[in-house]
Length: 587
Image 1 (cartoon, rainbow, N blue to C red):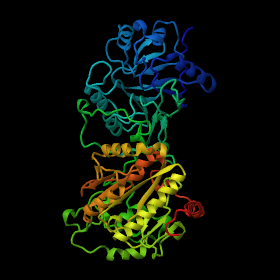
Image 2 (image 1 turned 180 degrees about the vertical axis):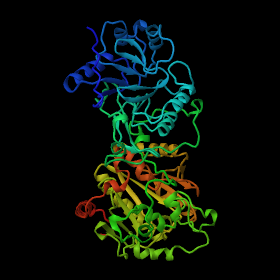
Image 3 (image 1 turned 90 degrees about the vertical axis):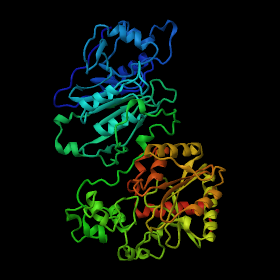
């Protein structure tokens, strides 16, 4: 049977592309599925395969198995297929024979049999109007099946904002740097064994968004998706408005711009990670602090919380910027990313160094912060319908935009910047609240993760409490350590003995109120802490972002994406109260 090539799309239409994960030699199953999809919902113009095409195991006689049947003409490839996973025991021999006559540079691939193209090394080519960039091979010390520094450098020279990047691995620091630099519209990856389509994210200094798609292995036992279809319009025929348009679930970029290029030979080797941790890089959104961008801020709104021009104002009304401003961050720094006054400025020039005002009183005595603080029960701004339980020193409340329905906050009644600074008797009450919450979540088959970001600013403390399924409890520690590695720091284990109460005692005795700190109390009792340097750009939502990745709900990492109506908030609080009443220490 001859292979039939798919017809090219007309210039006015978008090409229809199929994507596939690691075939691992199972080409019959892959192409059977492709044929079925093409007949039912096609036609499709091409298939792009990421991950490993060849079998990872040597067969009897090393004849190449199913791949050899296609190379020898005994089976036909149904549509034009491009692959980058050119490794496996039989791969060198089969590819050397099939590409024996190929000489020179073939950015669009070497056709090793009808409709099957080998994308070797790295390059950029155009496929039906789409710019495609690929990096073939695995991260490693070099040799067959591994990409080289030359391959990486070639991409930097050739690629500028392509339509699609093909990546054989879900996480690789070299590829991560390339993606952050090149800013593709689509990033396709394999080799993690799971399917994951991340919500689109914005790129720095680029108009378009990027969509990440990780694909499972062909024929995987978990029946996760290994075929995915896309139909991107070539940028050359898109209007400026369409290029700039972002879907409502667009998030911030998950990448932090590297300070310098990462040489291939210096990239660290990472152990295989649990399924819960795979694609963490794409789950978790990292704030890019300290960079100017977008429209300028409205000073009136930022400083006072209101603007007489309302929706007609030409400047940006940003609640988060206002929060930072009220925490003594310099307005010019928020607005432009820098301040002309330099060291003479009396206000903070870092979002993780908020409140560090030099030789000056806080703005209007912190704007009488107790009267305007969201968390002070005496404040007219407090949303009392969110309150679940009130004790003597602490109260429990639903947060705005909870990560999960039972996500709660334990908050000091008095205005205090950290739960670590509360009196001893209040610490005892906090322990009772934690015991009650642990029992409440245990009844639901869950366990609690507690974390707090303690900033030098004098904001109102809140201890975040997020329940996770018991099945994921063992992964919490791993994913926090992994997240720390991604941000370039290591957690300190406060209490190696695993006694959570002892851990808090040590934190309370060692905490310096002039420092910023993040700590997390893990389900097994260990406490991890990180002392934040004054110049460190630490994400304010770090704890929430990490758990959003663990729970596979990256779209909820930003609380603003999770806001609900007041009526829904009241219902959530009522439901929580009913279940929590038997454990509530304030009852």
